[in-house]
Length: 259
Image (cartoon, rainbow, N blue to C red; front, side):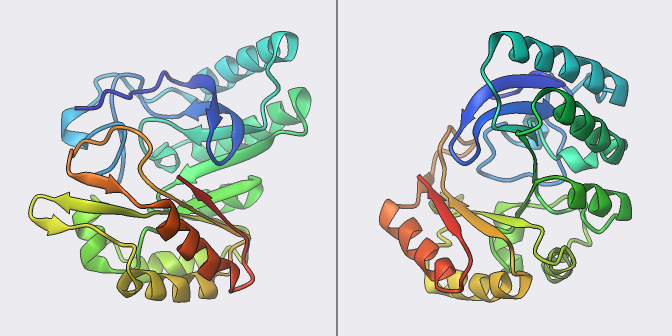
C-alpha cells in the first residue's frame, strides 16, 4: 500500500516531470487524503485507507508558511519554476481556494515574479463560480480529463459526486476559452477483473474530439510513475504515448508526453 502523503501546507521543492522545479502548495491535511475522486492509480492511496484526522490548513496558515518558504528559497535557492497547488487530494475543494490563489499570486509577484502559478485539479469543482474565476487567474490551469467514457470514469476515477457528468465538465472546460491545460492519464492492466487500458482508438478518438472542442493551450499526456494502490496497473508504453501526443499535435495543439 503506497504511503505518499505530502506535508501541509507547503512541500518541496521537487522536480516535476512536467513543470520543472516545483514548490508544492497542499491545501489538504498533512495526515491523509481529501479528494472528490478516488482514483485507482492515485499515489496517495485509496480515500478509505487514508482518511485524515487533522483539519484543512487555514488561508492564513498557507500564506504564512508560503512566505517563509519563499524567503528561504530567495536566500538559499533553488529558484522555483512553478508554485503548484497539488498534494493530498483536490485543492479546489478547499473552501478558501479562491482567496488563497490571490495570496499565492501576490507572494509570487514579490519573491519570484518569473515563476508560474499552477493548479493540478480533477475538474470536479470548476462549475463553482469562485473556483472558475480563481482558475482564470493562474498561469497553468491544469485540468484532468482521462476519458469521456462514463463507464471508464466510474471504474477508474471513481468520482464521489453521484451527479458527476463528464459532458458538463467538458462544457465547463470550453468556458475557459483556451485558458486550460488538459492532463490525461493513459495506462494499461486490470482493476479486479476489469481491463483499464485506455490507449486504444476506442478511447483516444472520442477523447480527441473533446480536446478539439475545448481548444486548450496545451495537453499533457502521462502514465503511471509512482507506486499505485492496485498492483495490477501497468504503464502505457513510450510508443503509445508518443502516438497519442502526435494525434493531439495534428490538431494544432501543443502536447507533451511524460513517461
